[in-house]
Image (cartoon, rainbow, N blue to C red; front, side):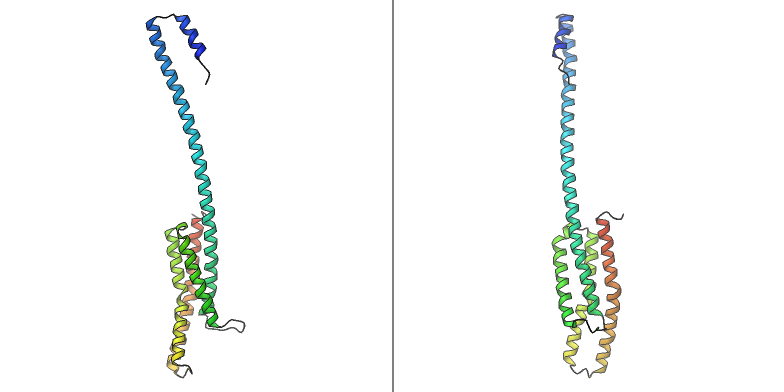
Amino acid sequence: MTDISPIIGSVIAYLGGGAVVILGFSSWLGKLWAKRILYKEIEELKSRYKIIEAEHSIKFASLHSRRADVIAEIYSLLSEVENQSRLLANPLIEPEEPPKTEIYRKTTSLIYKLFETYDKYRIYLTEDTCSKIDEFIQQSRLPLSFFKVINQVNSQDPQRENTKLQQELKDKFMKVWEEVETKVPNAKKAVEIEFRKTLGMIE
């Protein structure tokens, strides 16, 4: 704002030193200075707000970037777990396929790694996303539990002479396979949708 001191001096000299004039002029001058101080304070507040807004934008962008990294890491593990769980549950054994015991160990290791990573970073995820991941892990563990049952049955009937028991095992195997084939991909899709919501890709 322009310095008004010279103007004030000229006005006083022109009007003279009457008490009424000086009192009125002082009142006007006080209002003028009050406006000037208020204007200055408003400008300072605006400046502070812009700084705070810039800091908030930087923090939000950093958080969003970190959340995207976490989601990418967890989703990669979800895909690996899904593939191994379905492979373990598959009753058919392809010639190039590794032994079921090896698949079991890999699936167990991946599920543990998924849970460990998810538990460490779940603060970045919404409650809905966490519940969907919990459901995915639960469904992915189905073939692991059944694999233990297979080992127990085979230890009791190593020659597989108990036809009734072996048939029950096969029936159960097919049921687990059907459940894993439907529930695991569905659970993964649900997590994917929640991830997209979190990243703002869908409403």
